[in-house]
Length: 477
Image (tube, rainbow, N blue to C red):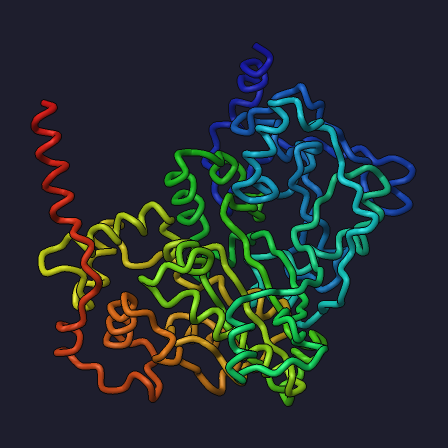
């Protein structure tokens, strides 16, 4: 009843058409305290954990959001991204932290394993090596898919934390030892030589790394995809079955933490050398492929290309340069693993068997599109690291190459995967990609229409299995 009364009292405002040019006006006036007048940081308003706010209702979500000026070089003027559940009236971002894992947080609360009022102790979590700041951090055309200050929460927003705000880092920076069997094999074959600094005799390599959650500045994301911000908001709202009503009702809130996977940055060598164009930089941007990367499926080139890139990064670091691998969670070309496996079945069951000629057609037949990665947001972590020149780009993808160079980063050499690393069943993939425009390099020149038609994948006898399943279905009917 109270909600209905509020809606009736604010009927004129609630019936306004929401758009980026016509934002809601029913905001609560901020009340200043003495401490606020001294340091300009407001007092946090704590939302009770047992109180449910329907964000589709007026006067509920972000009615008094903490100001944020995306692209401002001073983090204190830019302001923190606030997207935790404790400050619903002061939130300045749509969505939730941890991407799709926020659902598990809800499960933990439901199971009584997590106190919803818990605030993390960030005292010992600061980065173990320095990144930035760089000029690119204040250019939305270069960084709008992640928060460049996301790893510096305790440094730049300590005043908010001391006042009781629950502000979460969206980037974590640490170090690690990477142990890959391919590196041990490379040492045994003489391709890699341990130096005790970058590569140990055990085959372990020492690297720095950073985990990044996506944080989108919607106006720039829309620009990169060639659409209006309203179209972008409506499309996401529609295709998530209305999961985020604030995309429609709060066009004045420009920050969105989408429920998607993030990325991980791996660095071999000294990260401080990355912005120096005179120091060699090797880089691969890799999109997740669980079947190959983790379990070694041989239907694609993903793991061998990834491990080859790591090997080249180690060599570059040993020469005094730096190597970077950026690993995006974009499983199955961002179509998902279920869709990818459905495509595999289609490829193997189609008339004539798995063929390079129909490689892309099978994906489009199942998913309606060949690829949803697009790569428009992909260069952001490179700009976050201060990259302006890549000497060795370990990729054959024109889509990735074009996305990177279009943002002002120079690429000198493009390095294809060595032919001997391509698994037998992945010949279909590499042949189709090269024929349709992937950068072939010297190794793959000469792939013509005849080779496209004659390149076939392994037979799995799926046809016979399908016929048996059909007979069983008929018998059960």
